[in-house]
Length: 240
Image 1 (tube, rainbow, N blue to C red):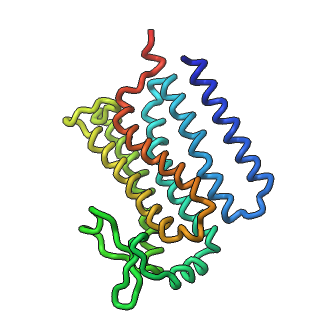
Image 2 (cartoon, rainbow, N blue to C red; image 1 turned 30 degrees about the vertical axis):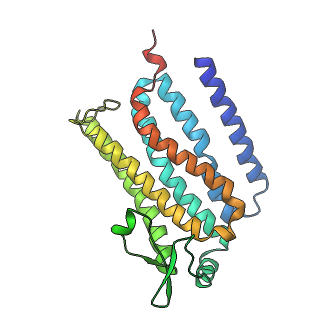
């Protein structure tokens, strides 16, 4: 089991390192590539934290902290990568100004302005965002704040653990663990929801990044499923 897991992690690290070195060797578009490298790192980071948590039970809490905090950071980096692909803030605003109402993109006209409608259930709680600097600011600040909130939730978990109030991997609703984990999963979902709104509006200009966005969506769903599967994850230290 150790050999199989170690081999998989080694292959993942080699392929990821090769891809990162390829970008560094042709670092001709730093505004885009620096964010792209941060996105690529999600694969080796997740591989290492999973392998370490399998080997060492005492490190599980800190591995989970990385597992929880990194996805919102990736959403933030990918958002900035998309903006860089569009040519920066000014070019993005120019692109928004020429957009027309579209049912496919949930864009409608309100009082002479094109606005972004939220999907159910968010349309019941959130106001519509004008497709201008308001939309850009909501997505940018939203992802940034969610990233900070995820870090604070992890620090809260660490504080509760020091007080013996947080027991990881015991899904008991009489403890803070399930509520905190559900909240952290919800924060990750919101971060990727903001990112998806921005990506869908700019889809026509960003067809070349569609495969990467689909991969990120796959990772997002793995995170949601992992919320419950972490409780049953076997560890090598538990095997006689």
